[in-house]
Length: 127
Image 1 (spheres, rainbow, N blue to C red):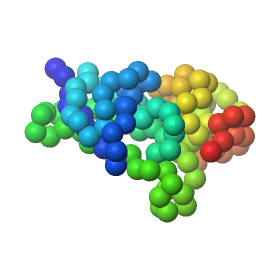
Image 2 (tube, rainbow, N blue to C red):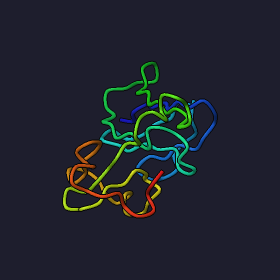
Image 3 (cartoon, rainbow, N blue to C red):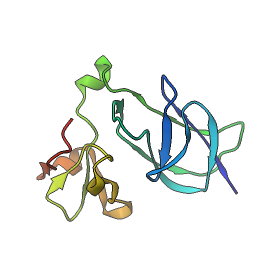
Image 4 (cartoon, one colour):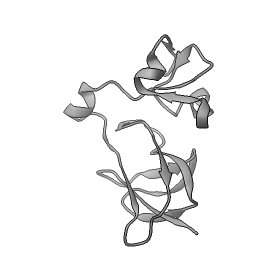
């Protein structure tokens, strides 16, 4: 059974689901049930850089809402970008635009402070 999602952003942007173009912001669309990674592609001028979330139990009248904001807002600028790392790696990433970061999925992925702990920023991933 399809699940219902709406990804919000202050302007119209492409929405990617699991790194594949799927829809545009601010319009409801359908995905299969399960854990999905949502992002808005390039340029990565939004926050967070991606959202990984379980999508299940939705309907057209109660879609799963995923919110992105412009990265240059005061609140977003004050916080460090979200980080992702592989449990087996000594580097972390701050954008899914990095091909290496985009390959990290499932139980092998760690996020935020845990991703940064003991790791260095992947060259080319800096904000």
